[in-house]
Image 1 (cartoon, rainbow, N blue to C red):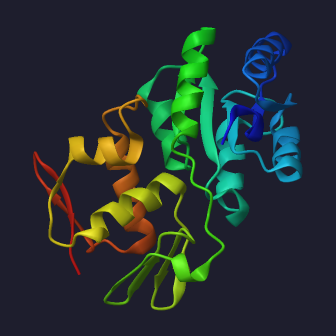
Image 2: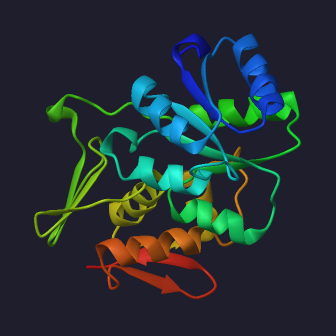
Length: 230
């Protein structure tokens, strides 16, 4: 897809930030929509179904974390890329953001070249869900069914709602039961070399997957990584 085909929503309560980011994205040919608070961000997201959403953490009415949590609870936004815009660099805020399904953090002050580079890297990872059921890549492991194209996990016939990165991580581990994936392998496949995430990101995602799908499926191999067993 070319830049002109991508829709990007920016949500920030600072008019200067909205104007600055919008200008730079429009200059690159993206379709850009804006929101000045969390409630408006939800409305704009449902109206335009953007491919990527940039969310400020601290916004009135609903903060970025609340907006992300709400979006990830809606199947329409399973594949939407969500990145947080924030001046806060504490590990705590990043962990919370990843827990609710965020894909990346972009720290203020924002440099135009860095912003465009990060967005291009994130969009390269965007996957358009297939509508052809015959193309579906399905893993069936005991009572677990994982459909890659539908981004769906079923356990005993009941759907387990995973955020986008949680699903990608779970699918990776389940694709080769018994294989130990190192942390470096997981970072490279799930997040890619172009995206910078904190050291605890994998641990947070593993914990959320265990809460949703089951504690016994993913084994921790101390000092190395994780493996899937059933």
